Image 1 (tube, rainbow, N blue to C red):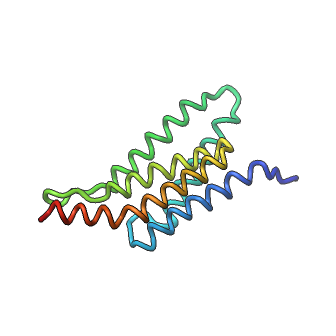
Image 2 (image 1 turned 45 degrees about the vertical axis):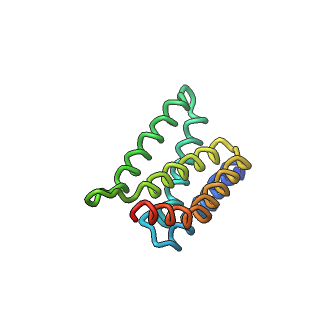
Length: 139
């Protein structure tokens, strides 16, 4: 049996890009780390690839179900502790990683890479700003 590399490339890129975001989350000791982000990105890629190749399927319907399922995962990451809420960034990260997987599944590689870069820059560069603003608000 011959390997169809055009089907392998999106999967490998989804693993890599999900891993980039997952590594950033893992380094900062967040709940959804390396493995979780890779699996979310890879799963979204697989479902998207399947939806675009099944005869008679509506890729839009399957994409909508991916978004719904990811919303369920994200909701599970959000916790309320007294007056404060934790996990919103984790939930948003899960959401963006799924969209990156979907972009890989439709072979929009450059777009997926740019979104990953923007997400990582947002997580890394804006974290100190967010902490400063939260501290100022509490005082």
